[in-house]
Image 1 (cartoon, rainbow, N blue to C red):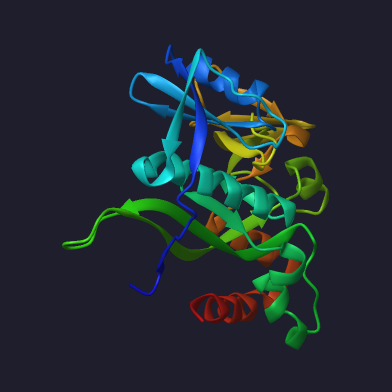
Image 2: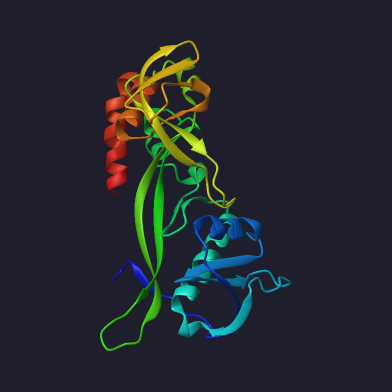
Length: 260
């Protein structure tokens, strides 16, 4: 398979802390408390912890020595965490933990910006289409071979509309008829804020957007607190409003670039 690569690692023995699993909130609290020093991996009715900082002590009620080849699921968690740290160090925007999803640098890899120069135009820094990569760390088993570890990689694209609705309205881009979301901070500082879909904009009154088809209990939102969901229709509408009579040709050029 062209999108699969085996992962080779030193078959080391590591000291692992062991704590009984209580519930998801308890596991989440451990990960938040020790986010810079330990990795926590749930295994059935227990939580395994591995120190990833050189001076960190074992966290757990008991401890045991584990050979990595004997616990490939734990090994996969360690590899996944290391790859996320590497991407975070490169200042990549990381969207998901498992499988890992991250996007290229919009300043360098904006596909919209690539197609605009022939039109004598430049892309605004808040509107982009970038490659999006999905990296899955998985245990695999081929015929008559022992189970091993590998990485499966896929590539897609991701549209971004980075201005809040209040700023879009000032630019003559109405959010009426489109869905909006709120940016929510992740408990993992390495992860980018994730969108929480709120509803579809029905009308505008000053700085307030009235919603329909909305989450339970939400009737309206402040325009400066929400963003357009970057679905194809909303993204194309932004192109129409920005580039007017050239928009159709630009969208055709962008579709060709995306296909390539």
